Image (spheres, each protein chain N blue to C red):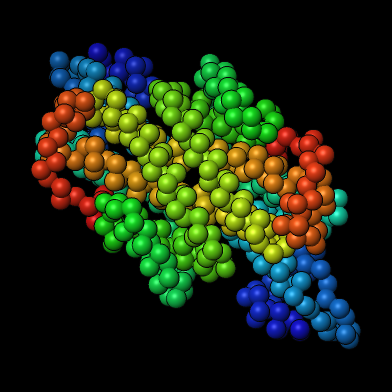
Length: 237
Length: 237
């Protein structure tokens, strides 16, 4: 196909396709005259992957190049390729918690990794991110929230199994990497949204007794709850 | 206690405390002279809540006022208060997917709510957000990822139960609301981080066969995997 058709087929504007060609994010077409080249399905697939990495994943151009190099290398296992991809995805910043909080958090994370036998290097950026988050909870005086960490980790593991089995069914490496980016990024928000919907539901069951809240002990309130006032159907009506 | 001590105790600078007083986010102290007032533990608790809402939750000043009004109203159940709080938390923007994708997504979400009997109004902002996310997956040609939606919803429900039982154990309404904000916001990132750690682990088990990835069918690769090359310990070493 010609450039115009490649643009139509992929949904990427011609000027952007040319930019990707110049940047080396897209391999050149087969030249048919000094000013024309022919493109094929491999270009459509590659454009779809590049768009997912840039637009959905928020990767930098240089991180995209690293992913593409791994996809194209005959030395990379699919695990390597997914590793490079994940490395390029931005993580939440871990802000400065105090040393005492970080030490506590580091011990807690080490115990978690040990129990689960997760293959995760203790110095990896993901582990650092988790340490930072727990340290933040500690600083905010909610260290006890770490008591539910195992439930979170169980849930994360179930979801990760489902995610990876989905992408393992995709037809080629480029689709798998693209699916990993889309699934990771959209999946985070999907999960956050479902969690809030579930919060609304659980809160209705636990706390919507029709009793006023102020100055009451919640344990006391739970035993009072008569469920006589069930007119609330979610928080954002 | 005096203003200086209130500031020290709460960790909030004096100028900021005065700003909150002017904005009505903090109730006045008991006036002891024309230029001095006395503050108590109720001020420390309220300051902690205001900081959590503004800094962790990212709520606007006016959304914080709504939450505080609900906390202080004798007519609000705790469920109402948490609803107002959740309403103030920013949601991910749901960008424009095409009509066909949105129609498909709406049907899918309606089925999910129906199956789970979640108390969530079909027009709520959370439902709209979920519809937008699924429509985006459809537009990105990953509608099949919705097949794992039930696994996500199961996980979200488990986590929400754990979250709400944690905050139900907190001593007063202000702590509960503060815990809900901290737990919701930090919890989202905690879960995203754990999910990526679990991805790395599941990927190592499924895909780290030491075989190159390019041009191979993943099903084929799985049967080839001899596990002879187990030197990878997470993606971000």
